[in-house]
Image 1 (tube, protein in one colour):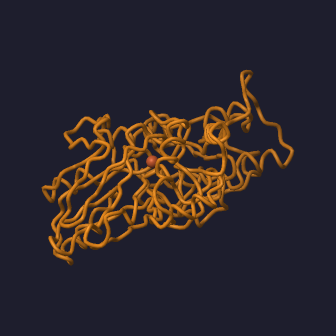
Image 2: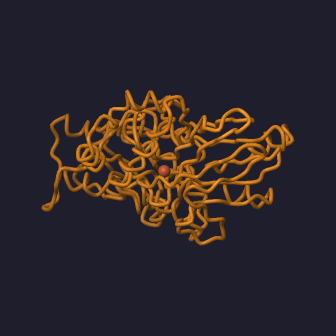
Image 3: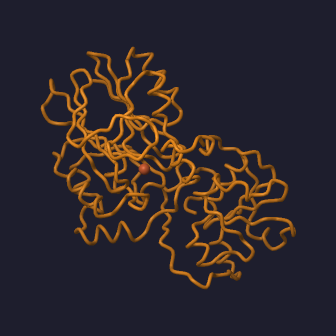
Length: 375
Ligand SMILES: [Fe+2]
């Protein structure tokens, strides 16, 4: 067999190419929009693409499945329950896809999303048992996928992960993410084993009620442009441009710049509404990063725009996206609302407010090297 993991530093996503070296048939799992990398490998190795599989409808990156399937005449596969507006082969729990001598066995493991599947890789000439499992956003390294996206829930995640833990200790685990916003405590390694996670994954030592309350109790902010990206992956919109694909240099300013803002300047707070309600810099307008591309018309192009979040990273990404969209007068506020609060300045709060559920994790913002982690 042939197996290769591709890591995308921009969104912390992992994708995979699995092939039979006997039949030269190949499958790609969770491809990114940068499909050239798979094309090149298929060409160099003389593989023929038979299946392109998304483990679930992604919310944090635009999937390359449709482009790849169309270009190679491959079958586009998702779990049979996936709600998408284009034709696909609906996979069932327990079904096996033949790939030369290999077998890809589908396990329905909902929780992060209701349609999420894991894929067991079996190589019968070597062993009747699976040696590896691609887990999408069910079991992650040191973590499990967040359950709060549409259709996900913590109880199913508990049951799905319990099902995966029935596999033998030696089974290698290849997740859909090594960092990024789909979990809150990923360790950063790109793979693990069932045995290691059974023993050392902090969530898997919890009983059912504690697992569920921990998972539901705190989640990272929704990813940048999630609304448009998800609609694109469902085939309901065509907004691949909503992916941040460049990392343009941006203007940055400290919180002291907010004291003397020009009267026509806009201060854009890209945190979640619950965070904004719990305390924001006076005068800031809330536009969560998940909705930025869908509500771009609300961001004026002809006035200076200052972008702020909790500690400067989400706003950096949003500022870069605005630059990518041709905005000239955008500035990231370094240190964010946390720095503003710390300096003893007043924050405005909404009358109706609850302590935000949003948690920051060191790895939430994949590939962020130009500003401090978190935010
Ligand atoms: Fe995901």
